[in-house]
Length: 249
Image (tube, rainbow, N blue to C red; front, side):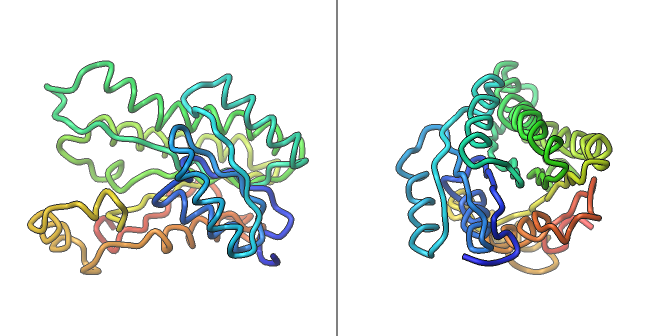
């Protein structure tokens, strides 16, 4: 396939479903050779690869735990060795354990940090080695509107996603001289499997505070990520771009 990302190698973490899957499919549609990371659900990961290949794109599975530094370094090293390069990294994988802080267990806090924040660090650290050597790279980190505005019952998730914003800005400064950009995308409420099961009264409550009057789509998030992954986006770095329908301005 030919497009903005022709001959580019991309890794998308947490790409077996939802926003991650949409991003992987979109990058492949733009011509990228996409490595689809997942941890446990091999069938869902394989489905992402099938969707890409059926559309004429190129994709391969990359199973590893982003919270494990050694596993991440080994897996990303294997991608670079196999593909010859890694041009685009999308740190999408994440998880939440929601509870009021007074009820949240320390080990639950640690788990949220390990996946969302340390996972982003682990993958960025491994990928940046190859990008710095190549004097080229595009890194896009998935944060959240919750990091910007906070939300009761989501202190751990908000803190981890806010940490990603600070990490993004620092990495942008560290890598800019090597033509490696680092940006964050902060989605608001997006139509996913998670929001599909919202009670109707909760959905109505969310819609009432979103000026656009609707939830976003995974494809809209994927389009934004794909734009930041382009070579032509080389003068955009260290930015946090909200995609939230006006929920947080």
